Every structure is written in structure tokens, then in C-alpha cells.
Amino acid sequence: MKNFRMIFLMIAAAMIIPASCKSRVPADLTTTAIIPRPVNVTGAGEAFKLNANTAILVDAGSDEILKTGQYLASKLNAITGLAIAVNEAKSEPEKGSIFLTLSDADQNLGEEGYSLTITKQLVKLSAAKPAGLFRGVQTIRQITLKDTDSGNPGKFIIPGGTITDYPEYSYRSMMLDVSRHFFGVEDVKQVIEYLAFYKINTFHLHLSDDQGWRIEIKSWPNLTAHGGSTQVGGGKGGFYTQEQYSDIVKFAADRYITIVPEIDMPGHTNAALSSYPELNCNGKATNLYTGTEVGFSSLCTKKEITYKFIDDVVREISALTPGPFFHIGGDESHATKVEDYIPFINRVQDIVARYGKKVIGWDEIALSTLKPNSVAQCWASVENATKATAQGAKILMSPAKKAYIDMQYNESTPIGLHWAAYIEVDDCYNWDPATYIPGITKENVIGVEAPMWAETITKLDDIEFLMFPRIAGIAEIGWTPAGLRSWDEYKYRLAKHEEWFDIMGINFYKSPKVPWEK
Ligand code: TNX
Image: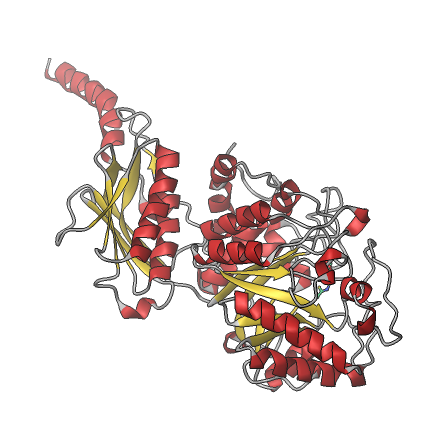
């Protein structure tokens, strides 16, 4: 009899415990799929539940933090269907709130670091600087999960625990070439919004090339009127008015993303040479160009008018650009003799400095005498990178074989080039900016950038296909310490981001290398 009762109780328990266990053990923060992976995560056996009473509270008296709170609210409301409101915090934040504060953060978190403490009662996000709150907000978005508790259908939780997080590199970037094909303001904003989700903080716009000049210069109006009128394949091209460019700058700044404008010179300048005959050594305007060759054009480095032109362009664009950098290109100047190239780059560095900006240029600029604060963007030449660091300059790492997200994934994926390599999702992830070039160490490197050249790209769908999922890996390389990165762990987190790609409507490459769940 006793045995019978015992067996009965055991069976009953076996039936009940799994169900009740499920409702008591919330998802664990340490197993959430945050990209880039945070520096430190601990889990706790409880979770914060979102419901109709959940509010976002922010430090009183700061419009800037209020805006970040509103950004978080709009993202969470879209996902959860709630109508979370944003209010200024009273002295003690109420239970049930998500609290964004600068008041008591560890100053060692730096410009972009943040810490999160999540309990049943409160989600507290602290940072030393507003940018850190914005980065932390991206983490909150990524850990707001559907409650798997069967008694809680359609509800959302944030798993309990703590996160302390800050970036490995201060410069984490993507470049978009809007010259070979032009992309309008709305497309560019969409790309910037995607970058924000992965804590990327810089967006480089390649604004001029042989095929098109894409930014209005008021003192040289024919650059856009004529030079912006076509693109690869002969489409109608386009350009940003200064007002539109400023709108992009502001949209990015609202996401703590810095715009780096590039005017490529002395090569890659056919669009300018075609718009103003006086910029050519022979005084004759070239024809517009809609092909994809490189290395055939050069500004006339010996003419004074060339430097007047550059001065005007740098002045006008710098006035619209709050960020510290101006990118002068400098790549593939095969039509410029090296003895002309070197003094040209030296002189252009002075012009950029006159307008209060620091120079970035492709690695060839290391042939010249770099200013101590100039940055060489390393895409191809180890020798140039070494020349740059020997002069004390910093390196921005964009090795074409790893980080060029205009490369095809493999022979059979549509769009993209393959001159540098086919770059599968794991290839793009498996490298380290601090060891990629022998002799160049972390101290030499300011960060990482994934360039997207646009010879074969004509629409936002194409940008998305080449960007995703590779950009997530580039973001992690820039943010997460090398010791915490491994493809075999990352690929499972990445697989979980398919859900995000679907929610955001992103046309991504479903690589066979990733253990997708769907
Ligand atoms: C090389 S990378 C270029 C660009 C092309 C790109 C295509 C670099 C600095 N120059 O002009 O668009 O290859 O991948």
C-alpha cells in the first residue's frame, strides 16, 4: 500500500514538476544571443517581466537621455505590442521600470561602455556617457525575449543578471560607396539604423569617384549638375544636397554614429574632371564614365586651381561634418606619378588640417609624410601599413580578403565581386585586427571597417544581402576582446539573429556555415 502511494506520488510529481519548473526558471541571461558579445555577463534565477505598467524612466533634466529613452520605447513597443511610456525619474525609480541613468556609473566604462543590472523589480542601465546608454539600449533590445512560460503567452521578459560592457576599439565602421551606384537618403538611413543595432559607431560615405560626384558643393555646382548625373551602367545617378547630407549626419548623430565623408583624390576623380575642364592638365573635360575600371584618372597635381578646388570642397564639407575625420581617398592613383602623388598628399593633409579635421586615407597615403594624427586605412598593402606605423600613424583595419563586404560569399552567390577573395561568413569573422599584419599590434590600430563598394549593387536589397550576416561579425570583431571570440560559439548566437533579420525585413544570405534554427 505504502509503495503504491509512493509510486502514485512520484508519477504525479513527474507530471507537475516540469510544467511548474518551466514557469519558475526564466531564460538565463548568460545564454542570450547578444551580438557583439558583451565583456561580462552573469545570470540570476529571476527575470523582469514587461507588462502594461512597465515604464522607461530617465534622469530628470536631460533632453539627450530622454531621446534615448524614447528610442528604446519605440523599439520595445514595436516588438512587444505594449505602449511603454517614457518619464523622468523621481528620486527612487519605481518597481517595474527600465531606468536609464548617468548618475552613478563607473567612469571606467568610458565613452561607450555601460552596465546593466536586471532584477524582477528593475532594469537599471548605467553609463558614464550618453553614448554608453545608447549602446546599452541595443543590448536591452536584444535580450527582450518572448516568455516561454506557457502560462504567459505573448508576454515578454528580460532575463535577470548583470552585464558590464565596453568596446575593444573606439572606431567600428562600415563604408558605403554611393558613387558607383547612388543610394538615396532613405536607403542610407536604413543602413545606419542597422549599424546602430550592432553598436557600430562610424559610417564612412564614399562620396566621389570616377562614375559620380554625390555631394553638392555650392562653389563648384557643376560637380553634381554634371558629375552626379550618371552611374555604373549609365543610370541617372543622383547626389545629396547639403541639406540632405546634414540630415544624414543628424540621423547618424542621434544614434551616436559619426559620419566620415570621403572625397577620393588624386585618382578616382573622373566625375570632377568631366565637370570642370580646368582640373585637367590639358584643360579639356573628360567624358562621363559608367564602366568599372579603376586607376585611369588624376587631378592635375601641378595646377594651383586644383588646390583651390580641394580647399573649397574640404571647407564646405567640413562645415557640415561635426566628426573629427575627413577621408581623402588616395587609393589606386595609377595615373599620378609617385613623385607628384607624394607632395600632393602632403599638401592635401595641410588643407584638411586647416579646416580642423584629421586625415584618413587608403593605405597608399603612407608613401607621403603623414601627420601624427593621420590614419591609414589598410586594405591591401602590408608594406604601406608598416610605413604608416613607422611614421607613428594609426591604422584602420579593412583587409580586403576579410572585411570587404562587397566580395561574394562564394562562386554561386549573386552580386558582389571576388578580386580579393570569396568571403564566407566565417572567413569574415575569423581574423583579428591586432594580429592580421605581422608587426602591427593593437596599439597601432584604431579599429575596423567593412567597406561596401557598389559596382554591382543597385538597391537596398543588394546592400542587405552583402551586409548580412557579415556586418554582425565585423561589429563583434570591433567590440569584443579577441579572447572572447570564437566562431564555434558565435555561430549559434548568429543563428538566433535570423529572428531579428526577419523582424527587420532584411534580405540576408542564409549561409550553410551557420546553424540556423528556422
Ligand atoms: C578597390 S579598395 C578599390 C575600389 C573598388 C574596390 C572593389 C580601394 C581602396 N579601391 O575602387 O571599388 O576595389 O572591391
